[in-house]
Amino acid sequence: MSPLSVALGIMSKPIVQLPPQKVAVFGGGSFGTAMAVAVARNGHRVAILVRDAQVANEINTQHTNSKYIGDLPLPHNVTATTDINEALAGVSFIFHAIPAQTTFDFLEHRKTVIPADVPIISTSKGISTESLKLMSDLIPEALGRTNQPLAYLSGPSFAKEVIQNLPTAVVVASVATEVAQRVQCLMSSTTFRVYTTDDVTGVEVGGALKNPLAIGAGVIHGMGFGNNALAILVTRGCSEMKKLAIQLGGKPETLAGLSGFGDLMLTCHSAMSRNRTVGYRLGKGETLQAILASMAEVAEGVPTAGAVVRLAAREKLDLPIFKAIGDLLDGKLAAMQALEHLMTLPLRAED
Image 1 (cartoon, rainbow, N blue to C red):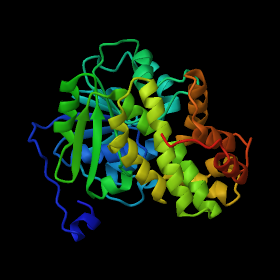
Image 2: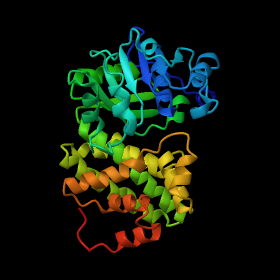
Image 3: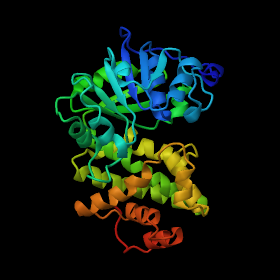
Image 4: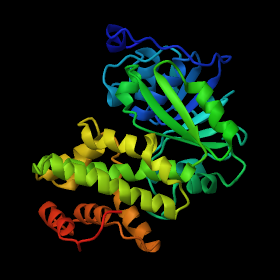
C-alpha cells in the first residue's frame, strides 16, 4: 500500500476473488509497472519483462523502479526478468506495454515463444507510422495468427496514481466479450474499476489521438494562450477524434467515455502528462529534438500526430486541428501560425 493511499484511508480489495494467477507484463516503463501493481494488489504474481538487468535487479531486491516511477514502493509479488521464457512460464495473462512504434518488431521477434491461447492485453496507444494501422490490426499481423485472444486497455490512468492506489477507472475492449470480462475480473478492485466494451476501434482511436491533442494543449499553456483556447482544442479536437473513429468503424459514444473524452481531459489538463509536457516546452521555445532527447520515456503523440495526418488524408477526412499539430511538430508552422490558421478557417456551423 502506498503511503499516500494509507494517509487518505484508501484500501484496495479485489471485487472478484480469483485463484492466484501468474501474469506477465511486457515492458517495465511507468505504465507497464502500473499494470503490474494493479494486478498484484489483487493477489496475483506478476513478472515484468524488461531489457535492463539493472532495472530487473532493483525491482527484485529493492522493490522500486526508480528510473520510471521514482521511489514509489512495489508489491513484493511483482518481480522482473530479462528472460522472456521465465516471464511467460505458467502465465494466464500477458499485458503488452511496449511503445506503439516498436510493437510490431517486438512481437514478431518473440511470437514463437508467446502462447497462442493466452490473452494479450495491449496498453499501447498509437498508430503505426509505417502502416497507419491501429494496434488491433498490427498485433495479430506481428504474431502471424488471428486466433490469439486480444484485448485493449485504455482510459484516464496516470501510472503514478495507479501505483499510489488512487481511484482509477479504465475500459477494456475486445471483440470477444469473455476475454474482456476475464480481464475485468482479474483487475477490478475497490480502487481500480474496469469497464468493458466490444468497440475496439473506438477505444483505440481515443487512446491514440488524445496524445497529439495533449501536445497541442501543452503548446497553448506554454504560449500563454489561455483557458478559452484550451477549451477550443479539447472540444473541437474531440469532434475530430469522433470523425475518425466513426470512419474506421468505431462507435461515437465510445469517444464520450473513458478512453475518449475521459483520457483527453486528463492528458490535456495535467502537467503529469508526458505529451502535454512536450507541447509546453515547445511553447516555451525549446526544440523538439532537445525535448525528446531529455525524456526517459516515449511521448507517443509525436509519431502519432504525423500518422493521423496521413490517415486522415487516406480516408479523405478534414481534421484541421490534428493537421496543425502535425505541421507544428514537423516544423512547417510556428505555434502562432498554427493558431492563426485555425482561427481563420472558413466560417461554418458547429458539428
